[in-house]
Amino acid sequence: MRTILLCALLCAALPACTTAVPVVREAQKCAPSAAMLEACGQAAEIRAGITFGEMIEVSRGDREKLRACAPRQKTLAATIAECNSNIDKYNAEIREINARNAKQ
Image 1: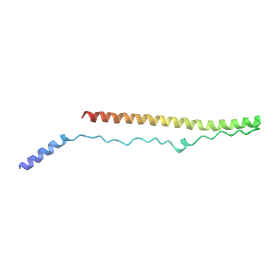
Image 2: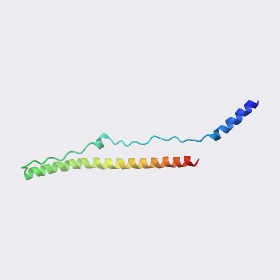
Image 3: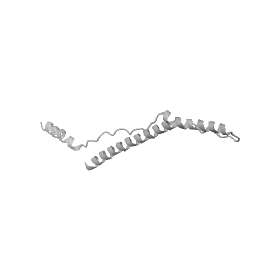
């Protein structure tokens, strides 16, 4: 009887000795799509002796490459900014958990 009472008291006191540790989630990865990471087209080389008309065509081609690339670069910049914002929020949560644990 005495052993049962001692075990009951020990089981009742045991949870008071533990500290709840929150589960920490894995950090977010910033993984833009392959299409976003695709390099923009290179500017055309200007050869010696090019005519004015050819120069206009080279310039037009370069502008088209830039026009096609600009939205992708804009989307990439927005994606990275959003990802960094999410990482900042995550780190703030971790700091809060660490501060709470430090008080215990």
